[in-house]
Length: 380
Image (cartoon, rainbow, N blue to C red; front, side, top):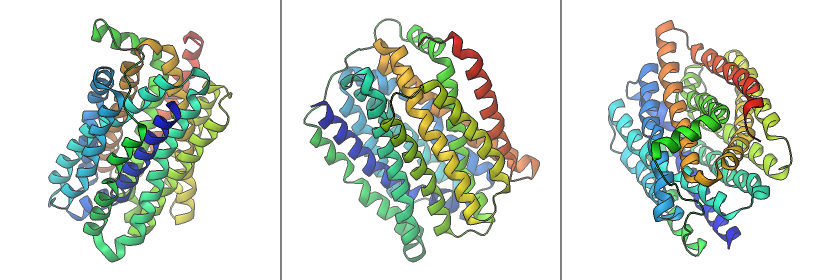
């Protein structure tokens, strides 16, 4: 039963992430065509991420009460609707409002999904199944941009948005394969604010890792496509570049699943180191091949860090798993607010388009130093 639920969940995630992957590489380029500056692109990224700073915590707790799959379904339905809304957008403000709505819906995907996997798996196999779930997301974000690259020149931006919607429609029915929802193994009890404080204090080094990783990914997804467009890469080439990130994220997720006995703390430190290296190299990457190699490093770094940090958090706070994973997803939201917001501002303020990537490197260095210094104080 547990494997059936996880497979249905992962397959649904794969389909909806493919839908999002079709549209996402085009959105920053489309917004720029509508007149968006780098600062505007950053604010659009902030709008997408701001709800994610709060609602994943509520989604994780709500899934304790109504069931994991029902909560996950909210995110699926919202994400399916979003491409239709892009068809009616005419200004960067419209794009920002749609992203705000999408950020709310996405809050109901990760925390309930990861909490469900934590409920139905043992500690020994959890990293493997979390890696599988994350890989399904990453593979969708790989396949989606490839589809976008194939059709954008012929179908245009509106054709891409229609394709995104059509694919997304199939995600919700797939959840029926799960054979029914489950209730939380451990529900959040007592004072919620105190439980959140407990989660943050005990899991802070891992939450810092998640935040740093999300800052890097947010800048790459929200600002980097416009940067590449100014380097004269075509829309199709940019879509495939975004797909490379997802493919190497999936490779990272799968490698963690195949080797679950690896030391998770060392894997996290390795991932942060790769982020630092990539943040330095990205400024000097001007041609298609060098850009692809740099983003491959970024994708793989995220792919090995995220399931490791998720697994550690679920073990440290196993009796408040829905809330603690909700807090983790909120940290993603904070990173997605900070990354585009600061990165876009720095690019315009300094008049240097490379400034966001220096910021990526500094964040990764600080996170690595803190993680190494704090590790001896973290419960195994």
